[in-house]
Image (cartoon, rainbow, N blue to C red):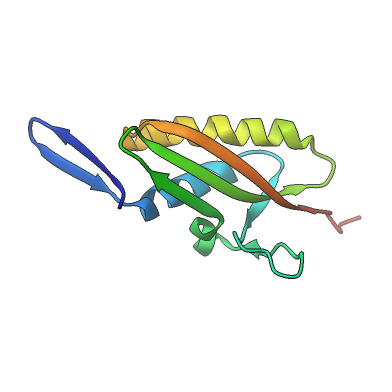
Length: 120
């Protein structure tokens, strides 16, 4: 479906795919986030998605009032999950509203896993 913005010059339609890509890229800028995870976890394993498939870790629901974004993430071991989540929420909301002009009603974070850095 997507979002429609109208002004005196015409109409702009923004697809849910574009919104999900922007949300995924904004989230990846946050410290403590290792990557996006697949929305469907099978066998209890969270699969880390590469940059080309960031939107698969993002679910967007559009309403007449705005958008609701669900992010499925993997965080870095040793980071405070609540701080990482709050930073992601703020960054995604700000970026979506600035870049697209749509109202962001909710940003929901679903932590699918924790990644331990193997470098010693």
